Length: 333
Image (cartoon, rainbow, N blue to C red; front, side, top):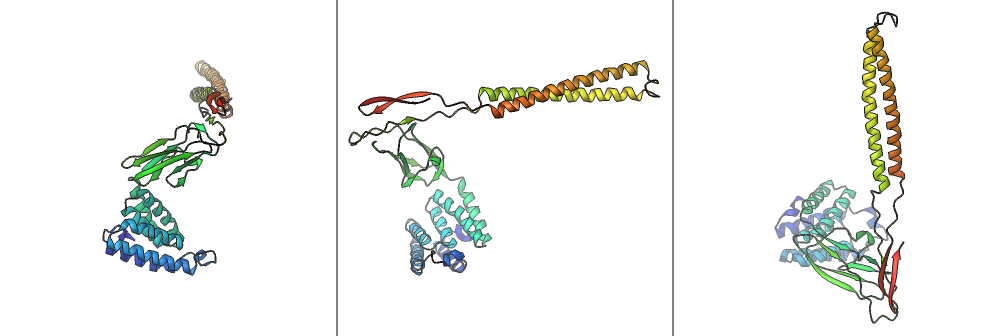
């Protein structure tokens, strides 16, 4: 597997053939079940794999990668997946290569090939510093039936606003919703990551039925509310008082022990200064107890304020948006 990094097309082809032979008998048991690849699938996968090798021999890396991918879909094998990852990397598709190596690491471990898994993990890690990312940010208004795509991929809500690795080059971001004109823009992601903010959509004048007006996106309530700030401050004062109580208590105990050591035969044998010091130690012990009680109450109260203070509701807002027959006001309260 270490020879995946070789720049020699001939050596690369030899490695592909060896890997295919080694894993042909190590395929997961599920691949032999009726719902796995059929005989026709395996034959097609082998033909595609050989065609990919032929492209590699000719130096046509761009043509080889789709064939490796088609072979992998027809009959999934770890060897094919790793060769696909290697092909992606040679073709400059860093995100696709990174994803394929990560997947190859997992599948290699499933078939007990720790050497392949380690190589795949190392190759994926080496690619991380070269990854470029594209962040697609949703519009600030909510549209019923909104669909946002990056190239041919429909983005889920959880993917919006997240910097996702993409292959370097031109990408198309599109957004559409029933009754609105489709928004589309092209962005080139090369040496640095990019962010695309989808703007508000325009109403389609040709729509037979006016679309429902969009709703404003509610602002996310701040985590550090007034109650939580007060709670942290109160708890901090409580902890400080507990610390002061500890210091006073320790000095009081030390003073009492010192006074007691000067008493030869119980209290009757105590000199006057020892009795005075002992009384002073008792007084300080009482003060220490007061600090402990106050500190404990404040610390517990501050913690209760922090954890139990209700999260503030989103701010009320009104937005004027186009609606049937004119403008309408929509908002959150």
